[in-house]
Structure formats: C-alpha cells, structure tokens
Image (tube, rainbow, N blue to C red; front, side, top):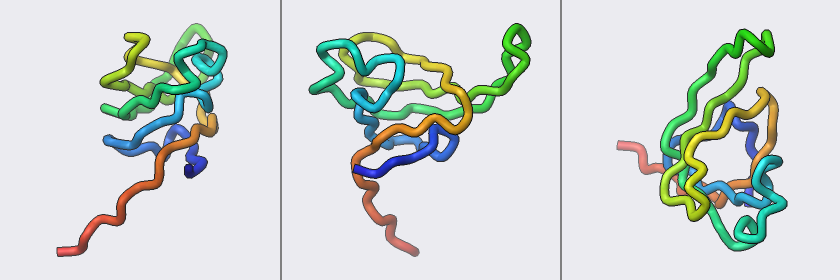
Length: 85
C-alpha cells in the first residue's frame, strides 16, 4: 500500500476505505476498496476553504463522492508502472 495525498490521487487508483477518515468506522470499510473515477479541486464558500472532491465507482456503500480537506492522506494499492512509448 502507498500513502498518497488526496490531491495526488489519479483516475483508476484503488483506495483502501479503511484509510478514509469518513468511512473507516463502517464494517464494510475493512474489506472494501474503491476505484477513483475523478479528482477535482473545489472552493467551498461556506467553509471559506478549498477541498478535493474525489468521485469513486464500484463502491459497496454507494457513497460515490467525498469532499476531503487538502492534505488528507489515503492508502492506495500499488500503482502499475506505465510503459513509455
């Protein structure tokens, strides 16, 4: 497993949901992983701060979008090295 800041996540990363501060206490988080679909930065006016919006797919709990504070660290499965063309 690799530790990665949410702003450095990439599409296709496989996130260990036990490392998510919002999902870690759910029973299913112990055995579920989620595939990152997209990562965007967004400003939330009511909080007066930026966040990182992560969209997941193929997640058992059907929570498909999570807003994380910048700098939040999640654990992901090792990334495969891409081949240079």
